[in-house]
Every structure is written in C-alpha cells, then in structure tokens.
Image (cartoon, rainbow, N blue to C red):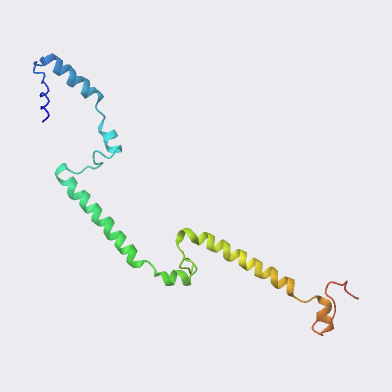
Length: 141
C-alpha cells in the first residue's frame, strides 16, 4: 500500500496589524468603482432598495415574457407568410434554400433559352398567314 503524503504545513506566524492594514489599503485602492461594476453587470444598475432589487428584476423578466408571448400570439401562420411571399414555399432545409433558389433560376433561364431557340422564324409565320409582314424589315411608307 502507498504511504499517505505528509500534510502540508500551515504558516501560523501572525500578521502584524500594520501589514494587514497596508494590504487592505492596497486592495481597496485597486477596487473597481460602482459604475464599472454596473457596466460589467456585476452590480444592478437601479435606484431601488437592495431588498427590492430581486423583486424588480423578476418583474422586468415577467414583463419581457408577457411581451414576447403577446408578440408570438399575433405572429402570422406559416401558410399566410407563404401566401404573402414572405417565406418560400419549400420543404428544403434553410441551409439549402439559397442553392435551391439559384437552381430554380438557372432552370427557368434554360427553359426560356430552349423556348426561344424553338420559336418559329418570322418568314415561317408570314408563310402560315400569322404575320402580315416581316417586323424586322424597314417600314413601307
């Protein structure tokens, strides 16, 4: 079995009152001011009595909760947002929706390009009696 380590020795020499006072004075000089503690959210920035500060904080939290609840109750449904074109009508993950829109735009551009390539020439339309004259020819006066 392993032997127990010897207990650490405690320095029991008394501190002189002047050393303690100097140390305390030094620490008090380095102490941050109240405004710094409020800025770092260590102290509450309030004028309420310390006994009432926790009740005030709880009341503020309840008011914020109530405000959020009311806002969520007034929030439009997803279907309404889709109908108003605020949300996209898609089941894709949000991370993929941008790529989905880009793909849809390219597919639409390809479809339009294909339809433009397949449309009949003005000469064919004149021959079939759909056009009276060639719109690209200079106007006759």
